[in-house]
Length: 583
Image (tube, rainbow, N blue to C red; front, side):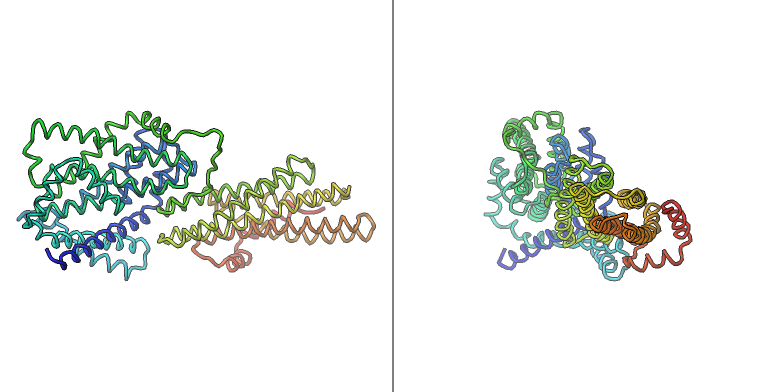
């Protein structure tokens, strides 16, 4: 093996890792909605958590990514530690899928059908289909399928390149002696752990082991099995690194992943060593095959899960001992955890949940501000300001997070959803600002002992009722993606615009007749402005919901079309004119 073989090995490894990453990300984007629905079904039920971890990891082809995601969930308070333990165990089984796919490279047969199953036979066809779909298809879904095919073809080509580059190692005595050394189980575990810790992917390190075993024939099962055990420990590095700076529960989740693999390795390595010492089975001296390594990888992870799943409560107590509770310090739960960005569909789902929280804060602030105009209480005023502060905080965090999320490779549907959230959260935050403005007007009237005339009180009640209803429609449209509720907003917004002008005119008449003071007039004008602008923001929210559904981002054009040609708009407008008329 010369320098050129080493360079070829490095190039093959790079292609292998790139292909695995490319395929995993494309699978993740394609299965975005399914990933979200899977994680929504998480319960404290062990089997449900186990199957969820297995399925998610099987889709995204990385137990490290799943565990980092779990650490993010626990850190955000979205998942309990007990749930996390079950998901992590499932992820360890799910990661064995990759080894089985890679084991196809070891097929050797003269039968045509079996030869066609060998990756070197069909990956060129997959690559051709993949590049065709990726370059020429207009459908985003087909483009993603093309990327998956290209990723798989690159992965398999990289593995084939690695295999070819190390083929000469079989004739080197020093290489043979090296793998005789690895028959020392402890050394094998250390080598597997270090290699996997460096490349941070047990799937990739198992693939490298398969390439080495299938080509040189020097890797025996006695050497491969401890290395596989060590690879499962090495993959914990990613989760441990991701837990730095998190709350204690998230750090516990990362340690659960580590302890699960260490305890499983200690138990099974002990069994392996006893069997090897007492029985010395001939299998341990046989050359490992691609499929044999996949079998060993699966048996190790499934056996570990079977042993430790019933003892998940003890595992939880162990990590609580390592990372004890400190009651004197109260840990804050972050609004959004950047660790979730490793899985953009899940990160986007959490953004949607937090945006719904923001919308709720804004709607509550607005509702309370309308109530306080009739009956001022310090408690209500404090609640309005608290909700406005939360809205500001959430809007700031969400905006920053969504911009970071948009820099990742995400599907067209997810990109559209992110754009919608960015537009809408700003409008809800402004509604909370107007709620505080209304509160300040109420406080000014109270401090200056200003009383509105009975006619003004009646008019204010009418427009407040209209603003409350339009806010309810906008909130329902956003939270439930309700197009019917969204369609109710624009005709009501038109009515509120007309109401505002009427109420201004009425106030001018009262001023002229000496029924109202100039100071009250300024407050009246501020109130009308804030109420009308709240309706404008509701119109923006509803318009955005309608545009996204119609795959059209030209809000002003949509509103013009709705007003001019929509019969339903005219009917609703007439109904609202009658409902909120000023006698």
